[in-house]
Amino acid sequence: AQTVTQSQPEMSVQEAETVTLSCTYDTSESNYYLFWYKQPPSRQMILVIRQEAYKQQNATENRFSVNFQKAAKSFSLKISDSQLGDTAMYFCAATGGTSYGKLTFGQGTILTVHP
Amino acid sequence: DAGITQSPRYKITETGRQVTLMCHQTWSHSYMFWYRQDLGHGLRLIYYSAAADITDKGEVPDGYVVSRSKTENFPLTLESATRSQTSVYFCASSEFGFQETQYFGPGTRLLVL
Image (cartoon, rainbow over all chains, first blue to last red; front, top):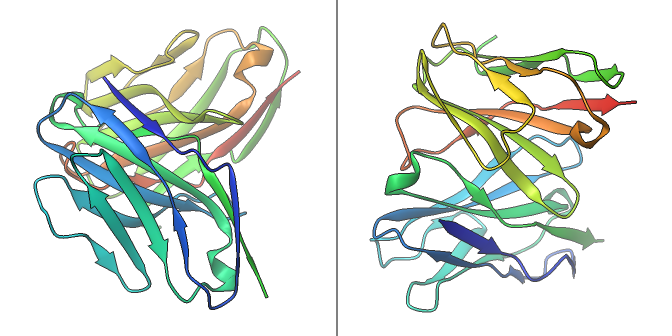
């Protein structure tokens, strides 16, 4: 079984600033994957970034990067140069080898980017 | 259109009625999933399917039925709708299994009166 916890219900940031969203997880899997999904007001779920647990290098996608601390079971998302279009709900999610692709989601963090 | 689609996008029904939500993907992905999204719970898995004719329960399967006779379709049926099933429902698919990214449909907003 897996659990994913996002302890920040809401966050706000000024345009062009940097913000970090927190996520902790717990899993008994030895091989697992972690994801951040973005859900804008349209409600479409959009993949932001994906991290393979066996890789020590933190994943990066343009302005989005993660800080993956395996021992601490922490998986935070850093958004650099925040843009108004980054305003959305962000979900952290995990899946593992025996879970057949079933994603376990955190409760979400609402991020608001202010001009 | 290519991708993953859901229909209807909005649905209002009454308690006790049967409702079927449709999901269709054009990628021939093996895995398909149904999630519901409620305030304070994020997304929770209802059912999933690893291939045609192979389905299994997720975290919150009670009151729902699924089938998968064709790889591309994965309908979700509420046999007798209840108010607690008012939610936003998302279908997703992935090519193989757990290591693959899941791609989500646009969601169906269901209101049960």
